[in-house]
Image (tube, rainbow, N blue to C red; front, top):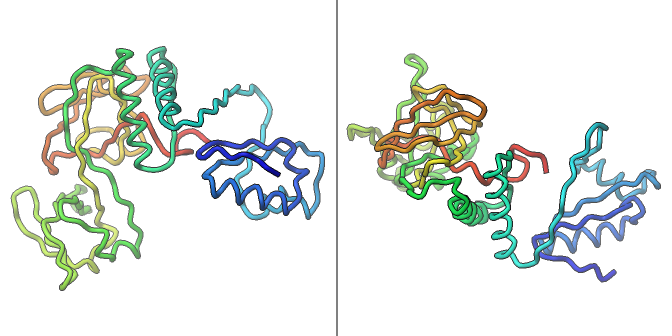
Length: 290
């Protein structure tokens, strides 16, 4: 019907229960081709087995229902230019953090998250939330593998980190992948002391965990997401911490709402890497529902 789709935007359809199946299919097809998120509002004025909304609900599409109580207001701002949209989001986000609000930015895609994270950190620094000096550390990001993908050689790269759980000592033994040999489907691992371990890809079981090692700039005031259990601390995956102080070889961090601090040993090498990442930007729905 001539609906104009703004790529990357959100389209809200009021009284969507009045749409026919044909109209709904046409609408969703156009939205998918233009990477547009669609929110269909059910006004309750029409129902039945032939209703487009009924078909969508029966197919398992996520539905959201107001359960009463206080309704949170939301402002939807449409900005066609992605660069301008990201810049405005970063600036308003930084101001909200400076004012003490609990804010989080959500966006899909690793590349887009990285771009937005950089803009947000610049804005936070401009607002005085983030310290002026960055210290670069090594961070480990989990690479999630299931029982099938665990045995696929293409997932393993030289320089990646693997940890093996030792149930007897209740510790993780850390190795770096030194070489991936295609002909023998073999991984050559080395520990901190350089001791070599040859491991068949087919022998990688649930005791092993794979990580990608990256450099991470960290400053005072930084919000970090904990991505896994950090040895010798009380921190575990899923938590958020704030960097209170940055010193040579260590970070002093604090959980939200707590006065006590903890010290994390950090370094530039993979064997000193810790399982953290920036906590400013995340995937949609990770901590706040879409």
